[in-house]
Image (cartoon, rainbow, N blue to C red; front, side, top):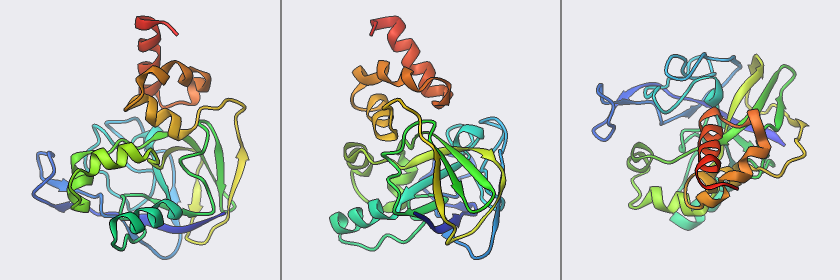
Length: 222
């Protein structure tokens, strides 16, 4: 398992974002050399966990629990076949394009060591938005992406440091529950009856997903 590509983005003006400034940094591009990874701060204040990477919509992206976004190259390859077009590393807005790692099958709270220093922890899947759809230029993309159920993973920074493309990825901790990124994504989108199952991941889960699951159980029971 390895970090195939390390990607960062700069803000640029586009006609399709709902941001007041009309900016987005979803178009991430591969970079050479090492990049510093560290906790960026709370959501709404902090942005990306990667130095040199921009997050424009801090209402929905960035912050300590969404510091880094990872997508498996294998999932991009599957979409290439389905869409009939080339999808370069970073095109989904991911910071990390991995190889040999089942990103959406990772368990919430699973920890990855990347290179000799950095340890990241899986928190939740990525919810698609209009900006993502317009960036790709695919009609009905939000629906298609959601139905596919392989959203990639957001991660928090446990141990900061530097990473670079080609670094080895090692799973150093795997929780004993069965709450995967894919399950969390399904529970918060199309299959809300699954929400009670997310509680097994406890505080490793993204705080917003944890609050949603607890509210569901309080309202409807298990």
